[in-house]
Image (cartoon, rainbow, N blue to C red; front, side, top):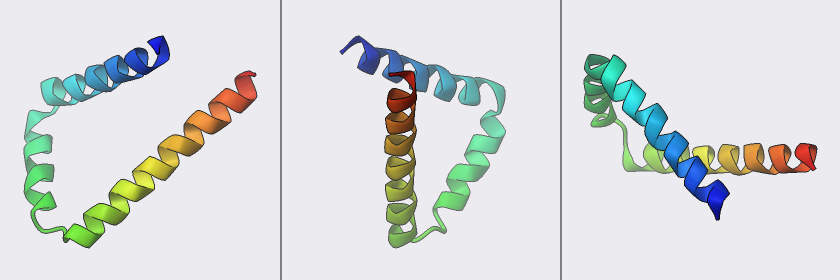
Length: 64
């Protein structure tokens, strides 16, 4: 359970850094996302999930 909270904390740190350092870029990206179809967002989300699971699996299997 501590690993889950650590991971969530790191996500918030990284997201906060993006908002603090490049807010204009994030606004432009948000505008571009309006042009993306729901299916494209689903594929992107599913790909991100798969990549995240793969990274966790590799990290856990290598570290032991």
